Image (cartoon, rainbow, N blue to C red):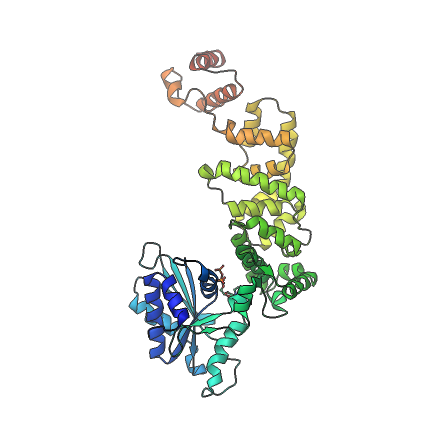
Length: 453
Ligand code: CTP
């Protein structure tokens, strides 16, 4: 099944030989069973977008749709095809998602097809009452499958099987929208049904430098004004999935290099209300996020902070204290993130009050070492400069100061090992921090005086 037309040529020249081989093998297996196989979604979009450029496409996700002609008999076509492929590629891991009859094949980093994820679905034909013999059915089921999707640029399909392999199926004007550089939704109530699509639309717009098509923007605003938060935050059986998807979209956005522009566009559209009705990107929050970036550059190498998670925590921390915990829980953030956000207000009060009274570094260290790095950063972002300076100073300098003598030194000096060591080392650390002791001799003198040796 050599793919023939110009798009197959395009595809072949843009994929790694291994990936091309996989697609060829998959389409052969589909043809043998009398099915059609389509490449859909992001890979087709990216292929067409990159047409002008040269070089191999970096593809890590492939979406395939199998279109079985004989609808009811072949509902499991995607799964069957995935199983057939797994026999040919035994290193790939097979996952079957029963409820939707979809399958995935996964290759890990060190394998032939470098960290690749291939989803194989069966075109949804169940709503189509046509007899199987009707030639329209073939096109109709893939059309139906594409029509369920979010944007026209994501609803293109490239046929991999013969005859007419390499044909582009463009039912909704996706190609024109790619050329016009716009993100256009497929149906009016798309965002009402799935508000996370607002975030997806923004992500695609910012990532590709596209505009959101005016009618699409109207639909977005309409969905937001019709009480988007009440729907996303409601607790019924459907919302956990919605909240998880919202978190996933926020993660995608907040870990992308274009996260600032995306956040700005979300705010312009009023879409931050999906997180909470009072959420907006005001100048204070912008400043805090800028400070956070400095902080991340400074601490990331040693501390394993997760930048997108810190950004999200800073955003949620900008809400009034009473909302923070609930929003963090709704979004199903990790337990430690929820803890930071719930404890933030109390910690901030204590820290601000104490720091404005403390004079000595040792006092600051004693106070701040009770708190973890994330919460200290969140407090620093929200505080006035003098407080922020002290927290910074603690994080960058004071937290790393060691007492001038260690346990071994104490032993050599003849102090009897025991619980007292802790106190002695703490005292030494405080004296070191405050500059009262600057060398081992002074340290010994201090100990001798304090502990009568
Ligand atoms: N999709 C959708 N609505 C969603 C999520 C996904 O309609 N809320 C559809 C889109 O048509 C998309 C396809 O499912 O093309 C696959 O989704 P995903 O892999 O998340 O997106 P990609 O388009 O592949 O984008 P990316 O390049 O960011 O992976």
